[in-house]
Amino acid sequence: MGEEGKIIGWAGGKILVEIPRTASCSHCRICRQGEDQSKMILELDPPGVVDIGDRVHLELEGKRVLEAAGIVYGLPILGIVGGALLGSALTAEAGSREVLTLIGSGIGLVVGLGVARLLDRIWGGKGRFEPRVVRVRRESGDEKVED
Image (cartoon, rainbow, N blue to C red; front, side, top):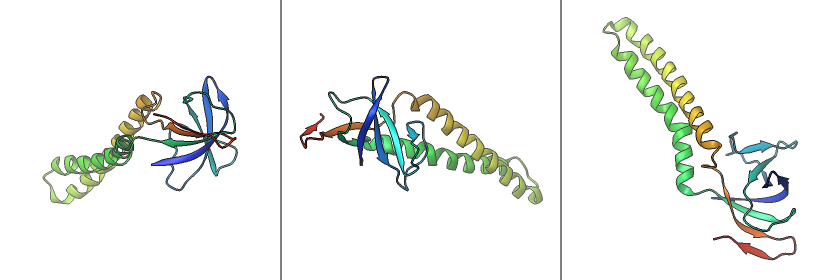
């Protein structure tokens, strides 16, 4: 899984890489929106000697993609199911069971989203889900591959 981008500047020892915004892209703590809504700006560690204008190929480890998907989609779904089961188990009355199941699933969804957001704040700032530069194509046409 990879994206192509262009180095557009430096910020605090990191490179600023501009990549096109895709439909599968979501707003996360890694990306900064540029003035153009069709592009994103990533702040990444430089892979060595690079210059503004160099083209880079970015990749995120496959297991990190699965982890992120599990957090973003899995936790809210588990919250909905767990909340619905808990709400259903809290009452023996047939008439109000559906109402408590619905309320429980709503509360479970909110809790699942809250946990996902908390994990994003904890892990997002540590670069856990940050792509890395695996290939640099210089403006001159030379290519450098990272190990």
